[in-house]
Image 1 (cartoon, rainbow, N blue to C red):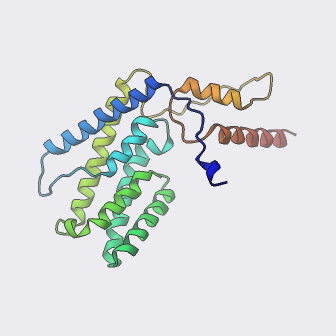
Image 2 (cartoon, rainbow, N blue to C red):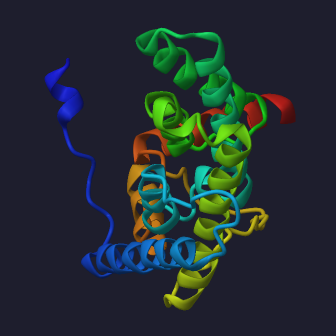
Length: 223
């Protein structure tokens, strides 16, 4: 069973789209790093957090994902930073602090509907580097995290909307009522995904299962 879990899903993303994602992330990280280096430093040294690279994966390779949208990006990093800073104040033991910081950040992000996986990395970075950061205080942490997330958002908006065939942030489009002559199958789901030509955070099998459950529910409520 464990070995079967390593089975690769069908690759429905074209090489062209993969190249786009690589080049877009290169441009996005360049913009963020360049901006952070040249922004006024004020009273705090402005650094680039490594978790922004994790955000780049979502922003440029899975830009349709709900986890890549503006609120999860901004809220996820900000709330996780607060969690990491608070935990390290009350838990001096680093192993426990790191564990609780990550777990708390995931809970808080879920609670505020801004789940963004790189946010947990931000919490961990703050806990693990507390000895270096504590001299600047909590205000510095929020200052740096907000700037990093904001610059990442601006870069994603610029770059993704320049790349042909892309649009960011994703727009909620209510589809028209379908009139399918037959039952939708896995091959139909796969075809639809090839037309989107983008990474979707769910497998074809799971999408089909969602469709089946929705169809069953619609049938029960109709009858």
